[in-house]
Image 1: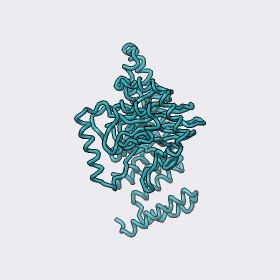
Image 2: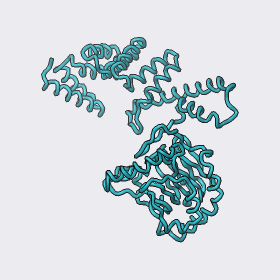
Image 3: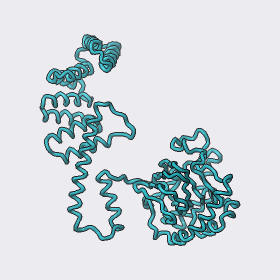
Image 4: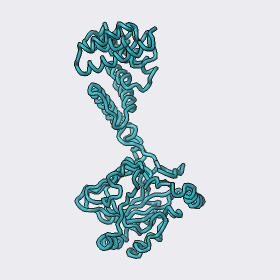
Length: 431
């Protein structure tokens, strides 16, 4: 046993040695390591660093002995077994290597290096399918935007390549097996194809993520089937009239166009930094948070009359909201989610200069003039106008068709009650 002061001194020397080694000052790195070894020759971290240096210099047998001494003194540190496996791999003792990696994973099941090493070991044995499964598990431990040392990047690239090759082979296998039972109807197999794409890692399955009320046991649909909204054809037939009203107010009522995103300073919504209080995404409101904007409705009587016939999401002080949405040229609305899945959102495209796309979850569509759709805005969605001119659509919210009348009555009472409870301190939680 060494004293607490000696323990602190040894760890400091090891840290300094590693920094010197990274700076390519080998002499200083060795001097500091030897000083640590003189204080605590059997310390597992001293033995580990000495083993790493020996391994880097091509002395695998010496490294193996050092790592074995380290794990004998510290049996619950996964990194020591990973290093032991590396020495065994250099000595081509592959069965022992795999055993060491299994010990590491028993301690730390999500250890990235152990998973990558195990997958590579299995791959060397020729079992590419089993290796791909372990590689996939390794990749699942990664976080978006995570940075890795340069030495690790080729291993990750190999893992991704192996997983992709396995997915391609599995797809061919399934195509052959399913050919005889494929339905003639594309609609009948859309969900199944989505499931397969998710299994193969080609598409993600998105779920509703409301920023406020999440109503359970509703279908998680990205775009809703048209047959649930029989009035869509009537709305689409009026596209020319609605567009004419929009074009008039767009020219004559510029002072009534507002930034759609208008959060106060200090609200933690980083994705809106570029669009907050900007008219690059602007709105001409017809209804706003449950209140009719009478002056604007009067300017658009045909649109107002059509909205009056729609099953709008009517919740006092919250809904409906209906507006002309104008997205400037070369502007993107970043990925986000809406406030509640008790509603769904309708889009009627009015002015499309081209190169205007919209993604909900795993499905990306091009807007087509006069073709409306309804989607769940609590599933992650984003929009692009990559053209040289503004894009305009009519947007309004509707009751989710799977919410019954009794539930609607409860929601109409609950949402204002929640707002009353918080009073003026209750910040808007989404858009």
